[in-house]
Image 1 (cartoon, each protein chain N blue to C red):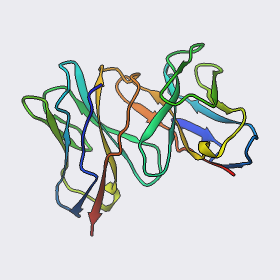
Image 2: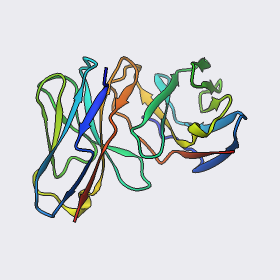
Image 3: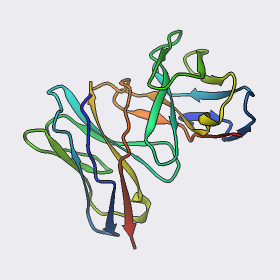
Image 4: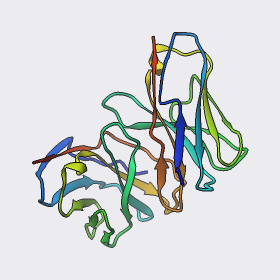
Length: 112
Length: 110
């Protein structure tokens, strides 16, 4: 699976859009980009995933560049409950039974 | 639908003691996983089970054993605990495109 690079920390004002970047310059054509988050010390929570098209669900949007070397997770209206560590993972396979490799992620702090 | 449950939530062991961490899921998933998370680090895979009756090593299997008792349950055993095994342990199971995680077991080995 391709290595991903994320900034260690970010702040965002409550109510604003939080944009979390991820670099995956060595990603291969069949690798998906997955995002998980970990709130406080809870178990990680799946957010969204995509291959090459932009994706949106009830939690977030995922924008993947045309060359697929980077992506951005967007939380459209951040709330205090979105304060968490966000992990970007490149995964070779669509199926959920792939083994996840977590880096250190981005610690997002939502400021009141 | 409880999702993934883990017991116990907290445990303190002395060096050399043994214990088993229990995990169960009620989502009829085939694949289950055990991860550990050390302070300030991401999760690392210890063992996984792609289906009932099969288990495979992950990134950090030394010092651990696992049992896939049935489709619902996947246990992790520490035969002789060491201070280096102080960590938070997470169990997970796989849906069609995502993993569901339990709340974790916080283990301290003194």
